[in-house]
Amino acid sequence: MNVLKKIFQSGQAFAWAIQLVAFSIPILKMGLQIPILILIIVWIFSPKQNLKKVIWPILVFSGIYLFHALGLIYSSNLDAGLTDMIQKLSLLLFPVMVGTAVPMDRQDYRNTMGAFVIGTVAATLIGYGTSWVSYSQTNDLDAFYMSDFSPFHHPSYLAMYMNMAIFILVFNTYKRKLSRGMEFIYWLGVLFLSLSLIFPASKMGLLTFVILVISIVFVASKLKKIVSRQSFLLLVTSVLFVMFYLNDPIAKSRVERAISVTKDKAEDNMDKERSQVESSTARLLVWGVALDQIQKYPMGVGTGDTKDLLIKEYEKRGYKEIAAKELNPHNTYLELALEVGVVALIWFVFSLLFPVRMILIDQNWIYGFFILNVSLNFMVESMLEGQSGVVFFAFFNAVFFFHSKLVRYENIEAR
Image: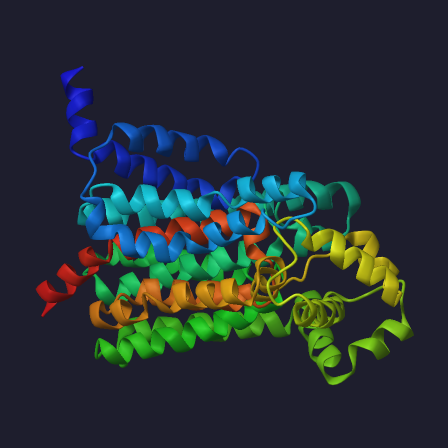
């Protein structure tokens, strides 16, 4: 009993619970509530720091949840609104729990990053396994691509996790003094995840990988390691990625279709083939509808009312397939503005920019890439409408921000 009490009082139990959630995010969709519940229970019995020290960032990060609570006041679909509040509860829970808990030590922080990477690799391997089973039954190569590749997550979310894991691995090869054996394992993980990015065939995921490479080059210049073994291995990985992409007709065709769609008017594409709307075309259409409605309702339509409003508007405009699929705006910024208003959107954007100064001062480049990664994906997915997106964002945003001083200390010692 004394040992258990000591583990809780030292904050070690909370650190382990954090690592469990980090590992679970990539491999669980249904059932992710269990490790989160464990974290809540452990947090209740773990030591806390002074709330006054962290109240402002907690309010900044959880503020968007409070806007949704206000949106219930003028919601016409209260049941949907309450369901939406439960779905987004992570936006409040993680800033409060991680912000008030005693910060992890350096090793536990690293272990949290490692747990997420291992979880992402495991999710990718499971994707290969389930795809192979499906292929053995159908002999259809499509079993390895897009939504069929992962039994857990939408391909955009899986690609987002993979890019985050790749950045963590590559950054650590530049920043930490690793043994040759450990460095080999890190780069093996980088190569595996980079080439696996082809299979989710997420257009934003592929674009983010290109931005990831550019970001690593920037970080390497800051660390004065542009000319290094790590940079050579990054170049080799990038070349192999391009070769695999160019020789993969399915992934390549997805990007080519997206480019062709942006060259044409979305309405024209809809008229040409109303029964089969390509995903990029659908996004352009729903974005146009959402923008029109935001102009009509600058204060938002109310928490939980977005879906009903959009379906009616789709039907009015003749977008029958989109209405049947009940598509959301596929854009977090538009979703927020439409649901709870332009002021709420401004607050949310402010919360994304809030850590930037600290990121630059502390040179916390992993956190910097995380903000860049989610901000880009917010543009093409309503990430706060599903557990795969909202938990990933709220959890890691809190972990990176409230434990950033660990990165600061490492940088000071490195100098």
